[in-house]
Image (cartoon, rainbow, N blue to C red; front, side, top):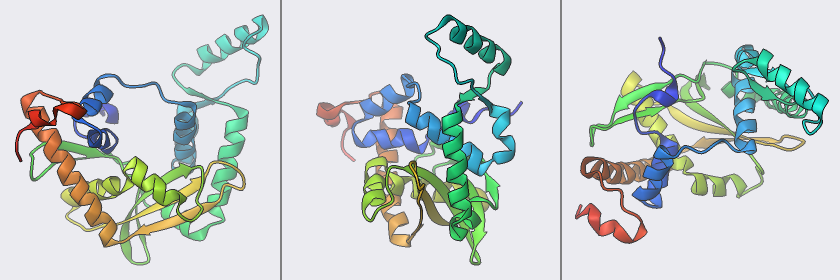
Length: 253
């Protein structure tokens, strides 16, 4: 049986990014997984529809538009959940937005080419060369564009205005992501891939913007990756996950 990606015991980018705050934040995150927010749930559904449209209805079910505060609404909703089994509910409103987002991507030829070709959502595992720690990633897309191999990541965002996505890169650790994914793909394929983000606004007109990452972007991300992995490795060996005021517990580099 194929293992679920979340069950693979390895360091992933979103968790590793928490170590920039403190190892304690990382450890709490992986031991106390949070329920996804509505924004995250919507983003995941958009990813699925846009990147893997043929499989969308294998995972999702269209939810009835009912008032669940009423008796009739509660009964209808309960019947829907029973019929849907393990599928994730998606509302008509969200589905309409996601379809419109997909249409906007299809109207952007560069974004369409990057997102609609190649292979999608392939789990990748590797052993970090410097710490011997297992790592994992799951690129949205592995494809070719203008004669080069690309890792492509699709992001939903509030704004693609000048400077807005760049701020998201700093806040969410997208440089780390680009470097970590590039490293993982190289360790599995022994081929050097370029990296690109396709960012799309979550509100009409669902504007799309493509960001091609230069080598400097990747190199800065690799420095972040090495620094955070070194901290993770030391904490993992010691079993000590210090907070803001306890960094001396990590010892000297």
